[in-house]
Image (cartoon, rainbow, N blue to C red):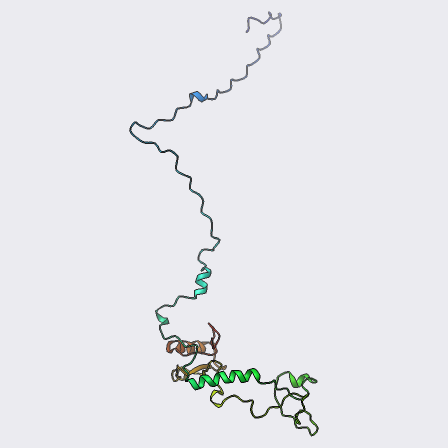
Length: 227
């Protein structure tokens, strides 16, 4: 390239030749890529490759939290939960069972006994208490038809069913474990007093559970009484 340049004039510097750009590295051609190695003779090749593993779908449940079925089944009972199951209904003779059915029919037909002037004064009718009318001119005392019904003989329940629960249990007020031990499982049910604290109440419920005594007002109610 220096041969093609004109001769330099005397006293002047010869201009430097322009630099050529560096050559870019050549990319390997597809033909130069190494060919896949063929399997050795005598071995069978599979028709298709193994399918890719699909990602598992998340169930959306938080680890460590019980499922809905486990919550519905309730806590698992260990060896300490051994004991007879408390009956939901007592063992009654046929006559008491018949009288309980009669009491239910009477309750459906019994009127609502309302005090005189209860519709006029809120302080009289708010607690639904009963006081017999004593006024000389009281229309309710004289059983006028347009006045509320007065309590009289014939509205009371049978004598043998008085004081029994709707299912037929005889409620017995208990305060100590000894009183729970004396109950008859087939006929009586425990009614824990309201003055008993939570700690003593849990003790009474544990004693009743081990003996199979029905508790009318448990701290943790599993089912409604009489069902």
